[in-house]
Image (tube, rainbow, N blue to C red; front, side, top):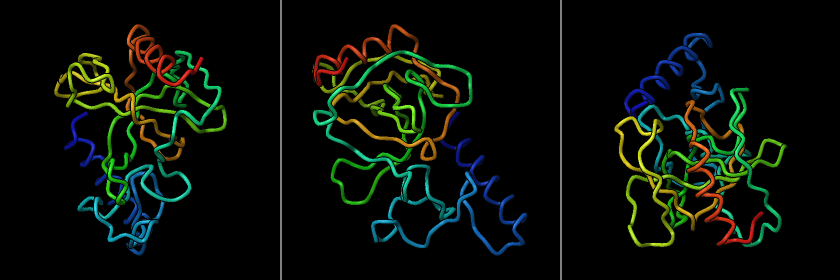
Length: 193
């Protein structure tokens, strides 16, 4: 699904919510009330023209970059399932903070690499701007998660804690061979199982 299609889908949902609520409350595509400023007290930079927050952008379900070395035991196992819940190997969309950690970020695809069974997931960011020869970027090639068919790269140096409520699923997964390449690279780098 292209960015334009995602935007239009979110806009239609938001407009529908406004009409269903009598026009008094503005809501996100997930039905949660919008806020007039970001949770970190910032100026609201990074919000879309519709003034809705992206999944994972703020609140208790906000996506967080974490130090993967401090996690201890992490079990990686390929497990996509059409059960309506996110699973390791699936690609989801969430708010990903910029590396500058200045409150800005972008709605981006990430690949779920592990689940804790309580609605929290570890994920690594996907990007179409890889760096051949850079050990922080693992080439994955093209797949159905990119509507333009661009090759993707997994960023191994940035690991995120993503909450089930802070993501948008769009029915794309890595195949097992590509997931295992990501898992092997993460095991080697962080000592995970």
